[in-house]
Structures are given as structure tokens and as C-alpha cells.
Image (spheres, rainbow, N blue to C red):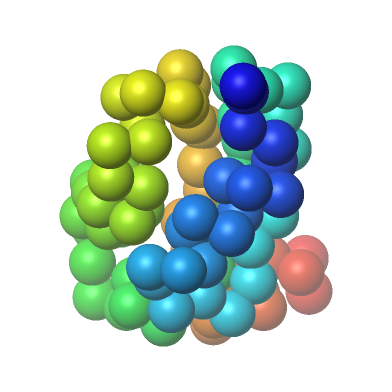
Amino acid sequence: MLPTPEQVQQYIADHLNCEHIEVRGDGYHFEAVIVSPEFEGKRRIARHQAVYAALGDRMRAEIHALSMQTLTPDEFKAQQNG
């Protein structure tokens, strides 16, 4: 059974302190916007590794591709304000 965007969102939320998560996808390929204070002071690779750690084995077994935008709360607010 393929995971839904809602399930992927819940997997991330269960293991990472997030203020905002949006996930879209078709069961194979997903796109996510993840906003977490845990990303403060971390480079993009470390942020992505935190998300992969939250997903654990699901990343290999269930989720075939995940494109993500990882933002701090301040970065997200700045992006929303244009």
C-alpha cells in the first residue's frame, strides 16, 4: 500500500518538532514544506538529514522520492511576506 501525503506528514510530525508541514504527492513522489525551530543554525543538508531521520526506514521502504523545502519559522514568515 502506498503512503498518502497525510501519512507522510504525520510520520514527520511524529518525530520532528514542526510549526508547519505541507506534503503533496502521488504515493511515489512527494514534495514537502517543513518549518521547524530545530532547523535554526543548520545547513540545508543537516535539515534534510533531520527529516530523513524522522522518516527512518520508511524513506527506503515506502517513500521513493521526497523533495523538500526546510525552513526555520523566521525564514517561513519572510517567505510568506514576500
